View (tube, rainbow, N blue to C red):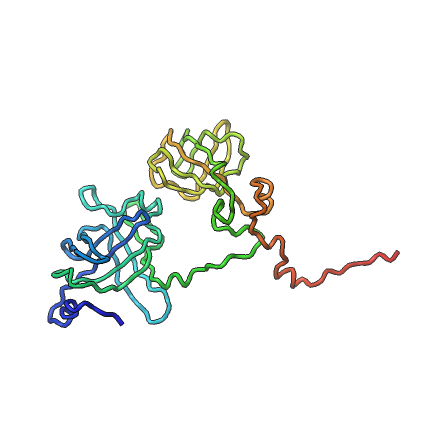
Length: 301
């Protein structure tokens, strides 16, 4: 059962309610986006929700629907990139760099005539994956807390290594020792370009690896390599997803190898078999049990 501040409860019992919706989004950098659907800025002086909530914030939400069971309560968050003269609380760079991925969100009501009279929480949750178009519009979901119950958190059992990320604590391999700096020599698209700096590595060594902007418009942004190939003294990189901003000749990137999670690669390429997590290679699985015993022919001669 929700409880309200006495002043706000008295306001609810009045003849006219002057309520405004506010939201607080916390980026992974610690910065916050404070917005309101009211026609002027609202300031809350004290408490966990203190701050000035901008009426000109370029992000807004749809209706919120709640259910009494454990089904996920989602609503849509959308907006558009504004002109430079307006408030720009979300940028392309932030969206692409991931600082808004799974960002905590709090949505609440206040009395816009007296914002410090109390607040009513209506939703807590997290932002989902962003989608944007060439017109500058973007959208994502505000996922309720029950979304966490729908996620798979157990480790998988297979013949391939089940580490969450190549080079993480469970993997134990220091990927940075094999990272190289490459320089763009020619550009086909933002997702395909030629670089120099790849020397003795075999073709395919960087497949599934990461490429991070170093000195470029895409500085700090990360993409995954789909395929690498060599032509002459240059390496051609194809990415799963193009960089959001222009890739120019002379830009530098940090390129790290990938891993296909097989036993042979772990042993022969990275010498890391002690940390290999593909337990299905060593332990018979369900198919082996269903096959039954293997018949043997004795040589009695």
